[in-house]
Image 1: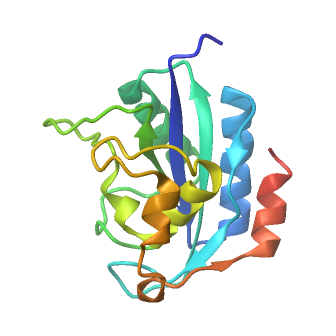
Image 2: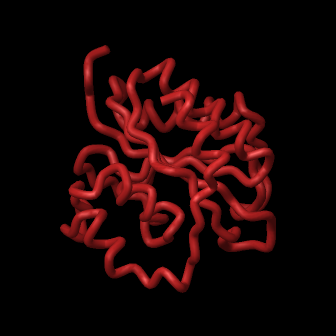
Image 3: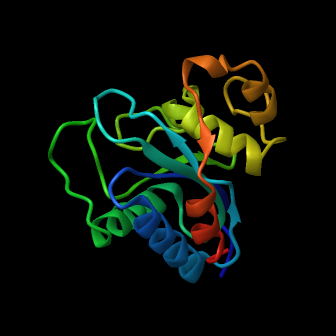
Length: 172
């Protein structure tokens, strides 16, 4: 595989999460090779009332440009039961987003925005700080560890989900 860029992904699920997250990580490993994987965190749903989400971050070396990777990830979601067309915020089997791709900043008319705005939430920022503490936010300039250090953690509590973390790490 010819490396195009280092991509940092956020994966989440609140429907049979252990199953879908483990399957997605296995497929990412099969396609992109060795992965850096954060622990899996449990958090309350954001933007709607629903079951807790389980979230993690994964770093990959991608041979795909950002837009092509985004298309590949949407197909991954679809293969794992993602239903599109409903409310923006809702329960889902699998949600996979590119959070960072190298130090790219994309803000144009396309559907891919980088860095991902959800970095303002604990469920994305903490797993990112776990796997990429020294990576700098391409706009803000602070590292993921610095951003997490000043995050108001009481606003969005997280707990590690050991069972799901173990299931996912089997596919490292």
